[in-house]
Length: 385
Image 1 (spheres, one colour):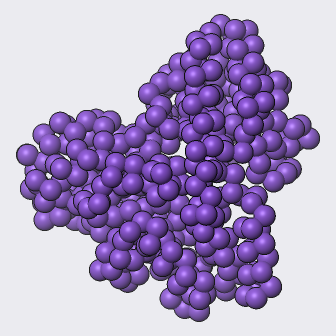
Image 2 (cartoon, rainbow, N blue to C red; image 1 turned 30 degrees about the vertical axis):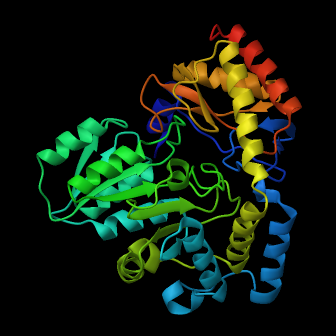
């Protein structure tokens, strides 16, 4: 039925397949029988296999069972949700928080609930697919502004009047690794009576001295109306959240379809996330280790002549351009013991194919030196360097 479409995908170098990971998510993993250094995971702080988190999950299974059994508004609202949402609200310094099943569900749930017909959403051109889909589902008017271009935002707002205006941006852009200019966006939003929503998925546990995200990074106390963040990246667990004032959270509980019509997360996941936030508070040195590794790898990649674009975070893109060459680079690295998948359209625009590296606090200097040698060897063999 889909043979022709699949053939076209293969001919364009865009075919994808699932690779089997046969070990825990650590700095090294076993993929299809081969041990490789993992340079693609969002497990930034190495918490996915932290012994205290695993123990918390086991205890929750023993006490509450394996599954939640229903949506939260039916009978799936395990008491652990209350503890987790209170911890998230304290972590983000907001009045309240609401946990969603995934980052995708959170973004489409928030956006399709807070904006509707007659409203206006301004969205950065490099925002994540979940934000794009949330904007579409909202039925609000959507205008895309040039990446991080605050002058363009102001130009759009000066010509538009809507009953509700929402500016939405990723905090850390997941494929480029750069950071949104939030202070300037907030300043413009105030002048035009617009709300600001920030997707802190790749900032939670990464930005700020205590890993609290973009607001802590910039020293912003007010101006962000809606936070979205994930529990499955730096916090090493699963799920996502919205955080903001109490009225927002009550509104989402009553109206967000991505929250209402889905089975609640298992108790083990909730307990894991609670413990992860506690560990982040107890072990801030994990963040320092992450950034030390990031700086070491980034300097090394630039020194051997690779194009790391505009990255400002532990997400380090290596621009290749051509899809086929990006695939060959990834395959060559795998042979050298490095796992760094090629990122191709539709995830990134045509001719901007890349390897998208993600550094972890768990990487050793030896891991990074081995990786740098592999990048230099494969890059030279493919005339990328």
